[in-house]
Amino acid sequence: MFKRKLGLALGGGGARGLAHLGVIKHLNEIQLPISAISGTSAGAIVASLLAYGVPFDTIVENIRKLKPTEWSSFRFRGLGLFHNELLREMLTKLLPENATIEGAKIPLALKVTDLISGKGLDLFEGDLIEAVMASSCVPGIYTPVHKDGRLLVDGALVENVPVSLLKRLGANFYVGVNLNGNLEYGKPDGIVDVLTNAMDIAIDSHTKAQLKACDLVISMDLTRYSRTQTQQMDQLIEEGYKAAQKTIGDLSQYVVRGGIRKLWRQFKLWLPFHLKIPELFKRFK
Image (cartoon, rainbow, N blue to C red; front, side, top):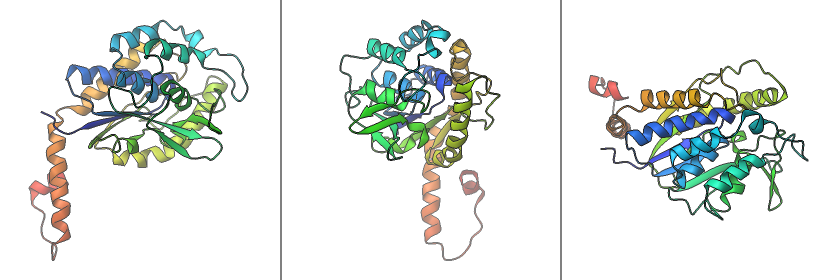
């Protein structure tokens, strides 16, 4: 039995975030309890629905009802090229009235960025739908969320896979889900792809370092899938499912290895001189 408190950090990636549903599907099948969950951008959407206990099939059904043209063809508005009210409508339908971050069944936190200060904000409380709208707001494409004198946008600008939030939520085993496992971005098909490619390049420069805080990373190559279209929903869910199935395996091995690593680090602190490391320690270093 896996006895540690597992925290799940879901990264951003636009429509590719549907792959998160495949990860959740596998975790449900192996009955692995999630003690805390954090999300950025597309990951914030899935994290919020999961934290409030919205059934997997209900999430899939509601996303499937959105036609690709409806999901991506938004009208021009203010500080962004498009509005994102269809997402708000779906969240309003699936989440309880006046849902808050702190009211979730599973401890939840979301990452956003303030365009004015340039700093990241960790959200552990407050209006959930507004927080999700902000965290999933790709700057320049969607309209920023105005709150308390701030302009809030996609948290991926500062932390795409928000592992840093999990400790405060009480987790002690961190699993990050990275949708940008392959550092190739594909040929852009339009202005939205140009903007998101540029953003992804900037984001990936710091994501690799941030993922080092994870005990386990579920990473996948989704380059061939669009960031704005959902017609390949089933394939994306399958990609996430297979990646989770391949990566997770028997989590008990990570508990054992993690404990041995900690013991070895302590042992080295008081070693008076270099000793040949036994093969047993080599395996887990």
